[in-house]
Image (tube, rainbow, N blue to C red; front, side, top):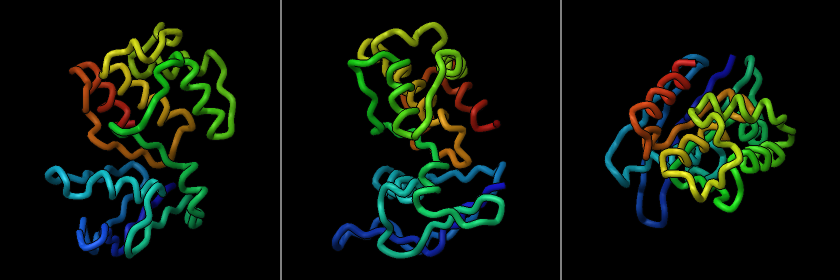
Length: 177
C-alpha cells in the first residue's frame, strides 16, 4: 500500500512564483489530476514529486506499507512519462528498454521486453530504430520505459500527447490498472 503526501509545496525561480502552498494526499488505487494552463507549474510539480527538482518550500513524502521511503527509494518506485523525457533514436526500442532497465539496476529478458512493448501497442516493433518511430510510437515507448520496474507511483505529464485514439485507450487502461 502506497501513500504520497505533498505538504506545503512551493516553487520559485528567482522572483517568479510558480506555485505556492500545494498540499495533497494520494493513496494506492487513487488518481490525482493536476490541471491548469500552460506555464502554471504542472510539469514542475511532477518533476518535484519524481525527485528530479527540489521545491523551494514544503516536502514530498512517499510511504510504502506505512514506512517513509528515502528520496532514492522514492525515485526507484516512481515512473515518469513526460514529453521532454528523452529516448535514444539511434537505438532500437528493445535497446532503449534494455538500457533503461540496466540504469534502474535490473535485467530484462527478451520475452519481458516483448510483453511490455505489446502492452503499449508496439508488438513486433522492438527491433526498429526509435528514430524511425512516429511521435505517437515514441510516446508509447516512453510508457513502456516508465512501466519497466512496475512502479508504485506513475506520473503522467500530458498523458495523451501525440497519441491517437488507440494510444489514448492504452493509457486509460494503464491508469485503470
